[in-house]
Amino acid sequence: MENVAHFLFGIFGNVFAMFLFLSPAITFFRIIKNRSTEKFSGIPYVMTLLNCLLSAWYGLPFVSPNNLLVSTINGAGAGTEIVYVLIFITLAPKKEKVKIIGLFSAVLIVFLVVVVVSLFALRDYPRKLLCGLLASIFSVVMYSSPFSIMVPNGVGSALGAMQLTLYSVYRENRGTPKTEEEALEMGEANQNVPTKEAI
Image 1: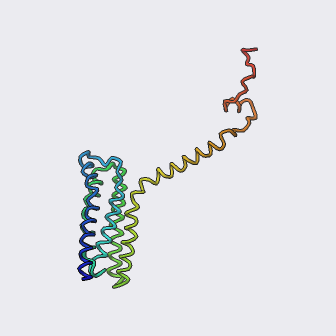
Image 2: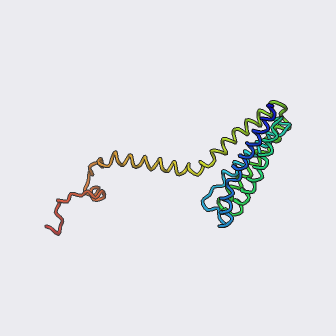
Image 3: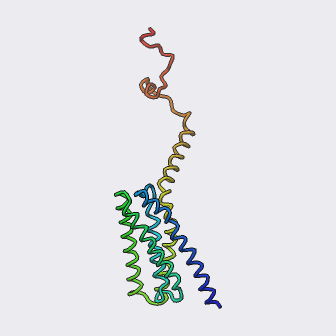
């Protein structure tokens, strides 16, 4: 009975996960239609690919027994994400294309290193522990990757708020200019001083 429940919950989980992997399809139909990635970022798709590859590897029987459903859904997810990444690379501007190709290459290298280490350096529980830990870590990275768009704007907003705060605190305290030239530069020249024309 426990195995049946495990299998049924696994099936339901896979169905919902597949909807998650397919949800960016609308965005990519738009990208293909407009022949442009517009302002979209490719980072979330590359990070999702890494998460899927590691999770699919973790679910294989020689790494983690009785988790084949994990491998199947994440294998399907990896295939979907590869399609997204390739479309993005094809239609992205040159600068973004170079960035995503570099990140995509790094993802493949990380996955290859994990495969080699887990196959030849570890066995049984240590192999399962390493692969499970990495899959969990990169799952968190995957879900946080959309924030890469917010970070520069967030920092800029914080710095802008600091400038406005400083201005509001010190706006009345400009200091007294020491010379007439400084007063002219500050726009605070004494308006009562007669000019040559008035004399």
